[in-house]
Structure formats: C-alpha cells, structure tokens
Length: 498
Ligand code: BES
Ligand code: MN
Ligand code: ZN
Image (cartoon, rainbow, N blue to C red; front, top):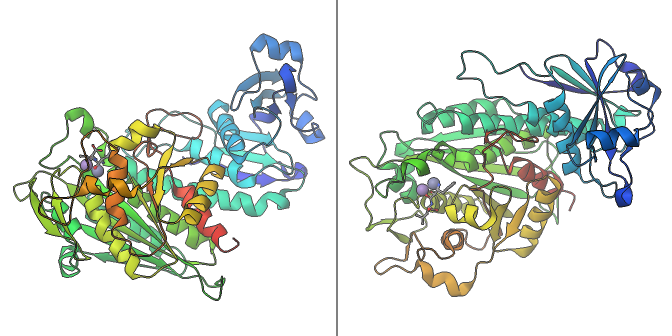
C-alpha cells in the first residue's frame, strides 16, 4: 500500500478526513508556540483551533520543536499540531521533517487534511510525507501495520506550489526506488539483477538509453579494477551505463552542460580474502548504495526533463573470497594504464571506482560526481548524519555542498593534502589500495580516486555512514536511506540556472 499525496485548494477537499493537521512554531524567547498561519475556515471546520492554548501546550510539554506532535481532539475527530521549531528561516528540511511527523502520527488508514501556508516549500512537503511512509514489505508474509492512505495538503493557492510539489513526488519516488534496491537481500540482488532492475526503470523514462556491459565486455574494455574485485565471486560483474539527453537543452557559455555520475555498486562486500568480521558484514548489502543513488537520480532527472545532459555509470560486482579471489600482494592494471597493488582486498570500492572514473573522464563532461559507501573511516569522522565531500574543484564542491544542505543531506568537505599522497605509495606498483593503518582512511581512498579523473572537475561523496539508518525516524526508515539522491537531482536541475 503506497501513500498518495496531493495538493488541493480549500474548496477542493472532498471525502472523509480521519485526521486534520496544522503547524506551529516555537514562540520567540520562551513565549508559547503559535500556529504558523491564521486558521482558515476550511481548517476550523475540521477542528483545527484558531489559536493554541498556552496552558494546554505547557501541560502537554509541547514546545513546537521540529517534528514534535501535539494531539488535540475535537467534535470532528483527531487534530494534530506539528512543530516546526523557531519561527525565523524555516528551512525546507524542517518542513520535510514536519510532513514526516504527520505521516508517523497520522494513524491507521484514512486521509489526513494538512493545512499549509501558501509559501510552504512544496517539494519538501511531498518528500517528507512520502519518504516517511516508505515500507519494505517484499519479504513479509503480512504487510506492516496499516498507515495513512492519503495526505491532502490544503493551501489557499495550490497552483503556486504545484510545480515544486510534483517535483518532490518524483524525487521521493526515485529515493524509494533506491531504498528498495539497497534493502533487497544480496543473493536476490546480484550484479545482473541490479542491472536488470535499473534497466527496466530507466527504459521507462523519456529520452534515456541504457547499456549493460557483461563480463566479456568488461574484459574487452580493460576494466582491471572491476575484474579484479569480481574474481572472487561466482557472479559475473556488470557495468550499467545510462545517458539522458534533454529535449529542450539549455546552453551555458555556448555548451549544453553534461554531468556524469558514478556509483560504487558492491552488491555484497564480504571483504574478500581480507575477510570482514561477522558484525562488519551484517549490513554489507548496503555497499551498492552509491550505484543505486546515481541511477535513481538519473531516472528523476529524465522524468523531470532537466535541460542538461546527464550520464550515470554503475560499477557492479560482489566482493567475495572465492578460489580465484585477488590476493593481498597482487597487482593489476586499471583502465587508464596505472598499476595498483592490492594489499587489502576489503578496500575494493576504490578499485572499481578507479575504472568508473576513467570511463566518466573519457566522456569529457563538465563535471563528474561519484557516490560511494567507501570507508569505515568516514563513519568515524562524521557519523551517520553527514557525508564526506572531496574533490579537485572548489566551485563544484561549494555548489554541491549548498544544494546538499538545502536537501537535508549535509556534506562536510575534507581535504586532499598533497603531502598525504605518499600514504598510497607502493613498493612495487604505481600505488597501493590502502593508506596508513588508523590514519586518514577516507582521505587515502579519495586520494586514489583523484588520480583517475584527469583534468575534469570532480567531486566525491563518501556516504558510508548516512547510506543506512539504524532506526525509522523522521522521514528516514530503517535500512537504506537513499542519501544523496535529492542532492544529485537538485544539483543537476539547478545547474542550468547557476
Ligand atoms: N564498504 C566498506 C566501507 C564501509 C564500512 C561502508 C562500514 C559502510 C560501513 C569498504 O569497502 C571497506 O571495507 N573499506 C575498508 C578500507 C580499509 C580496508 C582500507 C574500511 O573502511 O575498513
Ligand atoms: Mn570493503
Ligand atoms: Zn565496500
């Protein structure tokens, strides 16, 4: 059962309503919370109060913190007041979390009528509600508990918000597609199945082509990194290469911008011969999140008809310790001719991405953005809420960082100091695939990647922490989060206007 969301005018709200909701901000300087807009007649008719009772708020401990819920009841049924935090600068992220709170508190089944001001961010409302409603029930005999079926956002001038709202629906749909891929058990989503599902989805989008390279093509293309990692697995690797060409291209400086996205697609990371612990392996079906993210983003870019060219490359394989597995000490040659000594087979992501980035650079785009659950060190440095951002072009990184903040997918830039280049010096090859134990692990990985993009402006998102959530809260659900999908879409979409 999927939630349906809609945007309606006050007179268009038909059918039964099981719960009404409205929003409040915390009062300035400890003053009691206040509703965000004068309560319209259509809302009072549904039982939304004209003003909040300070005594009741105090009694219920309702301070209108972001996502906090005050439950009221009226003759007409249940009423929720959702907190948005302090009244100044209501960032989209707060509306996203508040819309999610409506869905979480909305109850079992039925329709919610949610009253929003005419300047609310439409995309964030749709995203928050839809992403909070996401369930992964494919493997349950009984579906999870009933939830709201419909959320109608009621606003004075729905057409003002319509375009943004619909874009939010598309972005949330893309994110849910990525979550499904991440949450699917690894034996059911091996590299060929990943490719099949992505191909099916992308071929349904306008002006999009998809190529899937099999193991023979991978060999013919001299993708040494991908081949090396795949050697230990009984499943052959895949490359998925997708291109979207706009019908109405926008020129910037006389050229149509072309952005290439590259994703790490390890459908299961056992570590290979440098085997992980049982605990370390438990969540390693998540290791294809980057590949899911870039493919989901491309599908949404196509669906929205963004005016720039977008390509996405997914490097897909298992990392397993089979009899033919790469051994610590082995050296292979990457697509660009560089040799890499594999000292830890668990540092596999950078090997497949090296080739993916070479392929991307050969397309001579204006920018390359890669996304990967690359290093445990990223989780140590920034935790589960923030991704690490690296790159060779400060303007590109600044734009991505700003968009990511707006999308509620925060990134923090880490450096690529030239003095650390020697961390990946090899005794016998051009480089080795790990840095110094316990030192700057995310930087060492990014440093290796930087050698495969040539002169092309490039940004790298290490999302090892935020790709997965340990709990369902706000608009996140336990398991895959699809972190980065909204940022990539919005980066590409706004590229034409910046
Ligand atoms: N997929 C892991 C990184 C990871 C760890 C993602 C935890 C999400 C949560 C990656 O392939 C890996 O194993 N990296 C090693 C590199 C090391 C051996 C140099 C790591 O971070 O431990
Ligand atoms: Mn690994
Ligand atoms: Zn990995």
